[in-house]
Length: 159
Image (cartoon, rainbow, N blue to C red; front, side, top):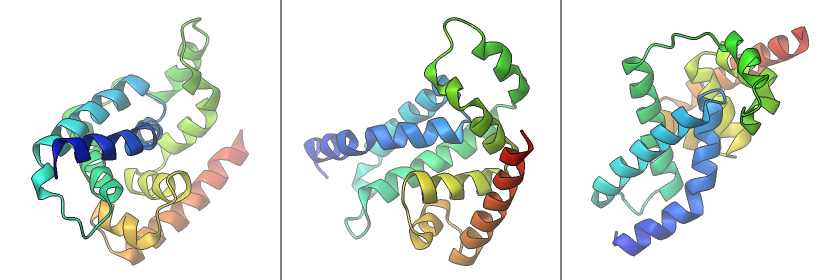
């Protein structure tokens, strides 16, 4: 892959990637930006490993997902998501807080359920593509989707 091809692929996928990471990070846009930047660096350094037999977006999402998981292992969250309501009251709170209830519900899901839900509904990936991104089986993805939907339904109707 040439440098220009890489830039072109990134330009066409960057918005969706950042949206996915922001949702995966439950609205923490600065953490999502950090993970996106690390993802793009890793992708650029390993662009020779990209095989044309799969979609670029699937490849970059796998890198993003693995980078997110690695960041979660490195950093333990110290502030509970319940602090989000206090932050939302600040004048400088970003627009992601308009989805505070959804982000809180997503935060209550397991990482696997949240990832499956976001990739399926927000990014439009099918079961087999999600299995490839998360390196799990299609049956596991179906199970994560089913459980995630059930948990979200419960969490969002409680409010």
